[in-house]
Each structure stands twice: as structure tokens, then as C-alpha cells.
Image (cartoon, rainbow, N blue to C red; front, side):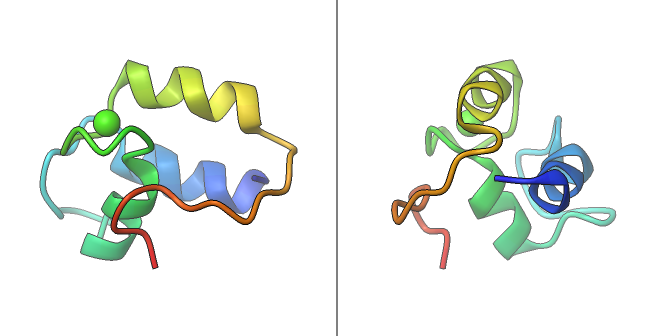
Length: 62
Ligand SMILES: [Ca+2]
């Protein structure tokens, strides 16, 4: 997780469906808990994993 991921996350924050600069793939990858929207719950996860490398992806994130 790096600044590019944060930019994607920020573009999708507050969205529950694709819109603006948040396309369907970006939304799926930013919805870290698979709840269907990108909110503070997702950010709490993002903040913990920022700077880390993982082979796991959020649900529906290619
Ligand atoms: Ca979510």
C-alpha cells in the first residue's frame, strides 16, 4: 500500500457505487471490508496496512 493506493482510496472515499474518478475496479479495491461502500471503517484498515506489502486483495479487487 503506497501513495498511489491512497490516491485511489481518496477518489473513492464516500462512494457506494462508481462515480467521479472512482471506477468499479477502484471502488472494489478501496472497499477493504467488502461492505459495498468506502468509509471510515475502510480507512481504519488502510491506515494499518499503509506501507506494507501483501498478496491478499480486498473482496472483488482484481
Ligand atoms: Ca467498506
